Image (tube, rainbow, N blue to C red):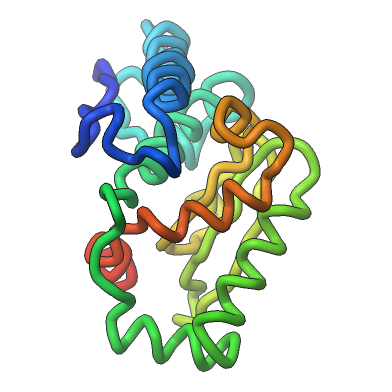
Length: 192
């Protein structure tokens, strides 16, 4: 199977001012594309060549895992956004968030704190665990909840290439801004 960079559901400038066109051009156009290219080169003539992206992530390690997971993580990340944001958390998701964190505001505070405190590069995820409860999970580098049997719902990319052109070292400002472009209709679908 040859993997391709998925086409974004919005124009490269559409998420401004939260994420600039310049960041999209580099983050999506260069970094995400490089992970796709690297993965295709690494799996050529191997047993992974015919597997799905999710299967590769669950059964590989090293460079193949890193590139496969980054392709998947970035696709998941970019496809949760929409210009100016859209919708609200469903009643079911709101109830689950309130059960776990008391309020939506407390959840956002905890999620942002986890993302701001992740040392180095990685991802912060809202996931549903096997007990159908919500958790906030921090993953370093290319880490993904798929390898732990968790259902990913929302993620913030805290690799510097995700925000440095727009926010420099102000990771908390980037995290706060991302809430303004969340497509809650997509997040609600992921929560089912």
